[in-house]
Image 1 (cartoon, rainbow, N blue to C red):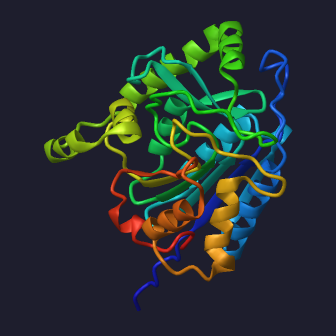
Image 2: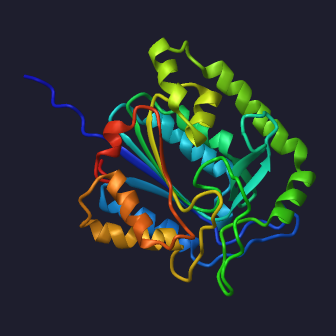
Image 3: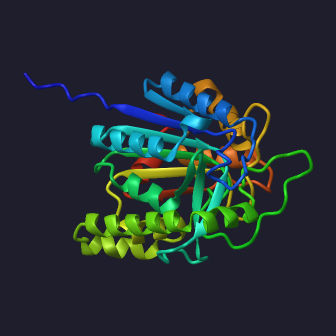
Length: 301
């Protein structure tokens, strides 16, 4: 009698930070209103689809907690499984110490006790097994790509942008330069050690890759998992906070419509983008063999 294949497994991780630690950000706390709501709403979607979510809110959304949760999921999941990661909070930048960014800056997620550099995020994503599907939703600034060409305009009066001010970012980096430079060096070293022999056809396929996908594949080589990232805005824009949800998350929830949405990831992104003003245009990019994943309905286990 044939053994029935095991059903796909799904894990999710949701971070929402309404403030950060003043001690880690040179006196800046970056107050926001709706990020914890965003994280809880994403976890609710995960539960409704049979996933097992982990939620890290504000003080619990630390570098160590995020990295531990991602590494645990990477060890647990296998081909066909799903990992859903969402972040709602401030985005920032640090100088690019390992010179893999065209604009000389690495984008970050502002976690409670320090920033997570995009190089670190890409490396952790690359550690998932072949065939694992990874969906990342990022409701923050600097989440559209990794090439920021110009400074975003200030937000309208009375509204809050999910953007660490440039002056704050400069002070934070100056005070913690050794730590952030060391993190980038360690990730680059680990990525070099983890790179497998590149298949010539796979190498040729990377020639057309641009933006964040180019940076990520330059860092770690071709991705084994299928990764989709839908962001809150382009890098020359700002993701806006709200009272009950961030603007991106609010429109995402409206398009999802309690699970009534039946399109694929591409149309999901397009519908969310169409619902937002021209000043905030969500982006979509892929890493690894994600073509089939992109055609699935979001949150499908």
